[in-house]
Length: 264
Image (cartoon, rainbow, N blue to C red):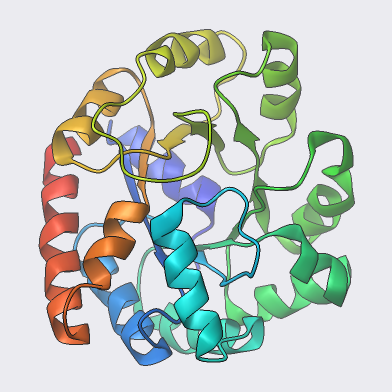
């Protein structure tokens, strides 16, 4: 299995920007999620973020919150998500990055949780409510297991805090393009351009930009500003939820192909 770092290094060696779509596991159902992972992989996804449904997703906007609620209402649990990953992962090229809040990790115990996701084939981890001050409780054991934990940089973070986050983040750095929750925006904040320049002076780690990107033109703009990856969530989740599961998969495929074509 290719690690997150190895995937980025290969792309950087070829001068390419990574495309990272996000979907919520279990919406509209687990069978469709399994198909969606294959669709994303064949549509140009370099890495895939898979969201674990959670009852109090503080960082997520209304589209992803609604998807998580629908999945939870169907009884989807972390164990179901990991079983799905274990079944699908051998058949796709893109490394899977699990997007989960800290409570499910704390509930199971860090070591036990990491062992579970490692066995399933998860390569990376994003935990949006993990504070920098407590990150080592997860970063160190994850690194020992070969799972890369990516930390988020908020657009309002002071430079000293950005430097501290950058130093600890694994795999890549997740630059949040907007203040607030995930969701589709008509414009990407121009502050991202300045932040990318600032961060380049402090690190050579890959930088991915997410939250608010919903159109191919925005993806290209972020790439041209210097991002190493474009992360698209709510717009993917919205399309997958359209109509029947098959209609949703078709809409997702067409949309992701357009995004990938824009940045490659």
